[in-house]
Length: 451
Image (cartoon, rainbow, N blue to C red; front, side, top):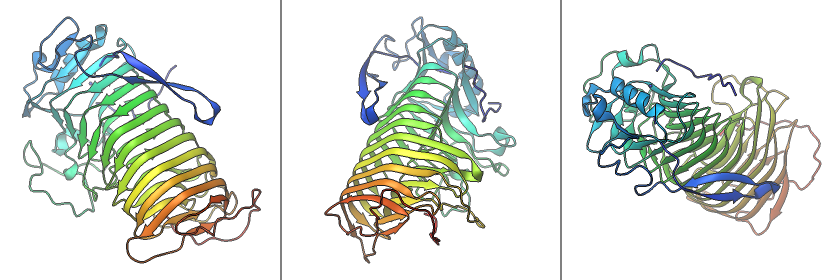
């Protein structure tokens, strides 16, 4: 398959697929096979953490990297990747007790061997001077068109995003490990770590922090595993999504802590068979599907399961957001066993989403159906439930059961507009605004605001 990357920019690669256990996701009447790898211990690669080399281990220090946080180690990373790319089941090692300054870099296939392991135990930091970024790039570190790529270890990827975040009140005593700022940063803010057009992808053990924008992105990827990962940036760092999924299928995110300035997880068009469980979120904007349908585009998202999630001090809990004027569908979504604490609006559907001024009312809409909310409990600060659906394409097949949301302060009633489905009582508070008609008629007006 020839994939053309819509975010392709000039920017240098890494992993191994160890023994795995297979498990099945059998929701929605289908079976999705996904890999849950066991990436601990020595495996087939010997002692990579100790920096020892064997025929398939390539350490960046052996290719000229300084690891002092000041020297530019980009070329050393490129050279290490070039060697690892050609070897069977190779391991590229970024050793502990070192800080590596790396400029925008792409670790690219498709001519690399399969099952490369990127062993990250040290720290990789982004440059804070404007010269390193030129006119701007969409990604800082990216892996493209690879099969069987794994990033694991105890290391840190630090985007040093404080120099990028605009219109925020974030204060820092240190703006850079590397030195003083020089020049104004470009307006395009990069994603810290992106995977594109790859399959059998695993990210585990590492920390990604202070990204200029999204921390971890998967675009056009299949069979993805993210577990035991820590993602963190201040709650008022703008547009810093934790994990962003787009055009990706068969993704499992588990046992991961997310704290950021935007959506903890953002699920965009083309995503299906996504399973998120045992995740913490906060601060941030919650776990969101969308916004979908922007600028009259088609969007399709299906077969999403989110369960055993804990959220604290987030803007929303579980949210679906679509723009007016779009088309397509969101269906087969389950949110279950969600615990919220001081969340503004724990349950939200917003088909009037708008994050800018001057959004016009439009008839077309992304349809929303077959959405289940089960066992969602905790406290809210603004509104317990907000279901603002389209006049022309009302939400259908909504199901709410075992809901217990109590106010942290003033109590407010749930809000529904053109929302149809069933309530399985009791719910706290009562959600009497949900309509039971299964075949709703279009019509009416809405003055709903965006969430």
